Image (cartoon, rainbow, N blue to C red):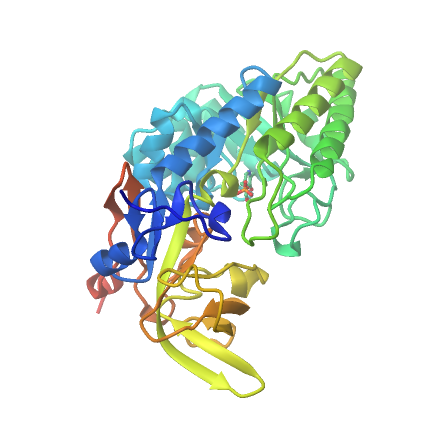
Length: 443
Ligand SMILES: Cc1ncc(COP(=O)(O)O)c(C=O)c1O
């Protein structure tokens, strides 16, 4: 029987992550060194069991607070046909923000009624394509979009269910670049400026657009609960006013996503059930205060749904020590497959796959990538046990917004993605080839 040893930090990895009897990190019984040798590095590994338990956690937590809650995965966090099929089979909704994300959903025949179209600048072609597919919801984000939707729906004589994205001017205390619900934001109609009211006034007059309710998304990742309750109270106060003035009803209500995950061993978020309780209580309280019936509540997790299920694996290729300054440990990936540290200064924990239990002989290391930018790094000043050339490193919590934001900078091919399921593993995306790099060029 394989030995399973827990190590410090295993709880920010997928479920069932241990050190095995070869002293290597394993997930669901699969040795990460074996995966690196089989598929090459850099490599992204997802664990199906973790995705499924996270889905269930969201569905159970929110449904026990508010019946008929809908969990709608934000595919921008990581879009992949295998994943979308899994989500469909497990009763999930999804949201998309571009025609490209919709194309992936269409490819796996994701039921259109369970898709919501977000985005601050959807083109008329994207809107028409979505409506033709029979998309369930479109969340309107600009005055121009109202006009475009009116034109399309009137032309084809179809009524489309829509939501309105409002901005409640509430700061969720996350990175400036991932804050979206404040006044100074390109997203949503501000309540404060009167734009949200103007949009509702317009929409209530358009017969072919059926306004089901309001949506906001504050930003991400949100470790605190208060921003959600504050925003819900504020948006419901506004909704009550809009009901009195224009007859708005709130049949559906969406407080967005933004739920945090643990990237660092000592910075863990609250369990999802805590977010569910605060969101559920706030909605129930507001409905009672303003005499609204309970809406269908739509939650939109991206990061929290897939983030912890994914791990990135890199091989060390060079080590440079600058005495009294810094140790650079360079790996075979970097900002091309994970731009979050360079873009947001995001922190990651880094683990040696073959030396996870070693406590001594560690070296403070900056894990740099192979791209031609000084800002190309994955983690700064992290302790790595005795790093050596060819060692394998794992970055947990790599499942969301890593590959989704990946690029071919320096003409580097993007990594393969492997799924672990029931002790076995298989590719859900092959590594790109140099042929792929040339496939769109015209000489
Ligand atoms: C409207 C909307 N909903 C949901 C999400 C998902 O956020 P997260 O991945 O933090 O849950 C985003 C992210 O940008 C968003 O813009």
